[in-house]
Image 1 (cartoon, rainbow, N blue to C red):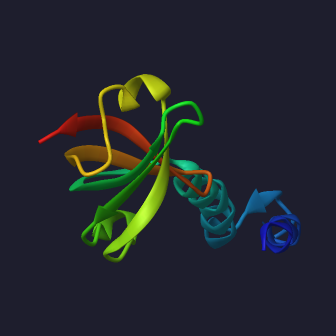
Image 2: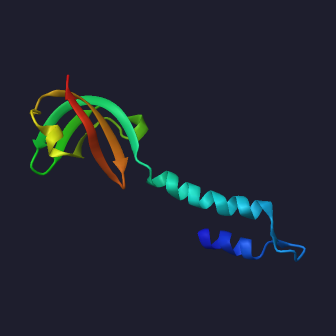
Image 3: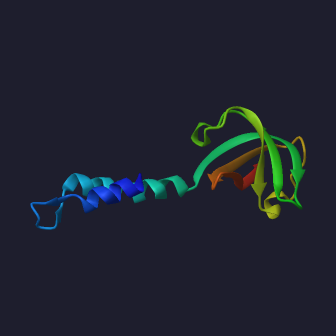
Length: 114
C-alpha cells in the first residue's frame, strides 16, 4: 500500500506545474502516522491472582478478568516483568498491576499486592 501511495504522488502533478493533488498528499501523510500508532505501547490497569512466578526469568502468570484496553478476555496469561517487580510476590497473592502490549509481548510495568 505504501508503494501505491508513492506511485500516486509521482503521477499526480496538476497541469504540469509539479503541484501534488491534495488527496494524494493526504494518503501519503496518513501512512507513516498509522505505522507509528501501531508501534506505541498500549497500557491498562487490572487486578488478578498470581498463578506462577519465575523471578529469575522475569515472568509471572496472572489469572485476571477481561482487560478490554489490551483486547484480552478473562484468562491466565504469562507476562514479562523486571525481576525487581516480582520480589515478595508469591503464588496465590492478589495483585493490582499495570500491563502493556509492546511489540507483540505483554509486560508488567507496575505490580502491587492488594
